Image (cartoon, rainbow, N blue to C red):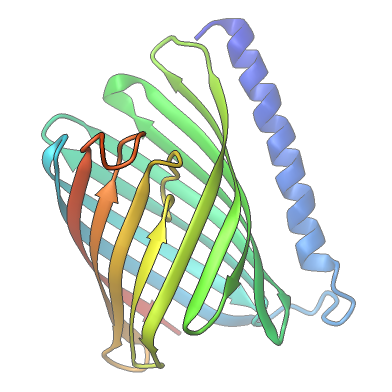
Length: 245
């Protein structure tokens, strides 16, 4: 990557950071009802293990850990780290985000997420910003917004892409102790792909104790850029533990 392209990337990332910082300040302090009185209403930490069979890499494994803090039952700050490994390569992913409930009695949310993905062996890196808006109901919901991504590969010029990010889910049953549902999206907690990349997930969450829950998901991953015709699919089982207090 030449010096000019690096400078352009730094400028774009600096502008993105300034815009994100301004939005964070607006979301946290624009509400005259709650003012500056913030208290932690919910804390959560979890770890997940996901073995996968992928047509491109055969077997691979993902280990991730995440945490979140909820303030005043309105704002949530979250982040996590993930390691994906296969026989041919490994990938390191990191994410951080902010979720804000716009109206207390209506499950309408604004999301702002940042993701960093790198394949060190291939000198491939990407920076992704997701400003999203969504409706998160008890039994169904959706999320839409742009996927703003800067990516580079070896010494090639930095590429900027703006892609539609989408998510939809349906919960067949949802209570405090048990939830089972179906999710379809072209992004997850650590990666956001092109329009032809999507994740179909049958997932559940089971409360073991008041503070400890077990999560399960059977997922079909489509990782090609032209839908199922590219055949870069994978099937995975995800299991995790979530601790809340």
